[in-house]
Length: 475
Ligand code: PLP
Image (cartoon, rainbow, N blue to C red; front, top):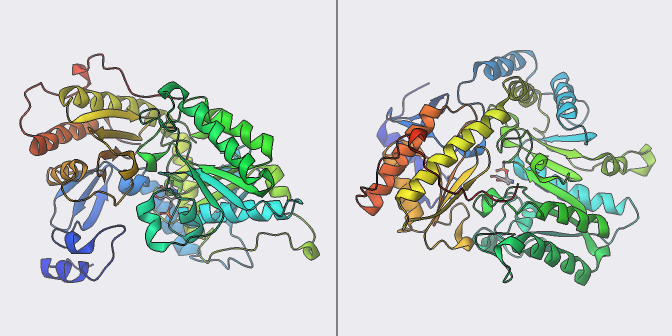
């Protein structure tokens, strides 16, 4: 491995397209991450950062985890690639066995490489399911505005951020959107406490008006990270489950971010009292040690794909790297760790601690921070005057407070997801209370850098916590 010179970095960074970044400003001060350990990463200049976003909600087990690294290395030495159209491999079988234990309501798993591949596959599976169960007209999908379900055209069609969709329109036909049940920005004139019931009614009305026999599935994140960590009211997803059941519509949960312990349960649907028919997993499935995603199917869905050769009812889709043995080795090691180390419990405890720190900041910066919320180690801080339509990745425009605070935090060695009016945190599930204190301290300083001095007190650690009402809602 060679160390890059500053000149090499500058010359080559401008020749790349980093996800969602305007490269002309990225190259002015490119972040080039070189190594990691636990919750920390270092750039090529040796500067250390706390990885407050687990890369992108991926590095759940931290960086440099030797158990996963050894599992991956052993598999690389044994078989790096297995013919995906002719065969499976022992690690994939082990992974499916583990997933079956963790997800007893699901019978069948399609292994893929990335989150978009998983949501794309879920969309195709839902359409094919209806064609093979005598309802071929069911081809439409309903999802939320402000959602993100991936970058491929089907997944992007389900996505509800106009800035991401507009450059690629017209998208796939048959995708409808409703506003999410946001109690902080209640849609359709609802009172905050009615947001869930009102949106569930809008979904049902949409199904009726479109004709239920045209609707294939409803897709959502059980906790909507891409809508700014929107935690739906507790009555929402059970109501959606009932609406779907009344109209023969499949319910798909996109748990690419919320799965694998992130929200304080192994899967976020465990908070909701509503189990989906199809579940998409990714990111935390390996914690970033190899690309892997999975779609889990309930038995009644899987059944439609099981038949004699001549029926040709199999899923007519696949990807070269899906269920790759190296990725599956990482997945088996990661899920074993998740279970043995009780990381969902840890995410809940550390998540409460992080939220209390964010609440202290909200008290200290009342005119700046409008609200904080979180579930497990998935948390958000919304700035005053927030525009809920502008909370997607890559939608922060220059001068927006969210962007400025994130830049100041980066200078102080802290990374998190930025939006025009929001900051989102999702550190590794192994984070300690000391590291959370450090995160809160740097964030406080970054707020001071942007907003000027504030002598309303020290936000050091949980011992200073007063009784700030938390904005957690729903589950
Ligand atoms: N679904 C959700 C909720 C996501 O947050 C993402 C990515 O951030 C995706 C799908 C797409 O996953 P990937 O980027 O691995 O394709």
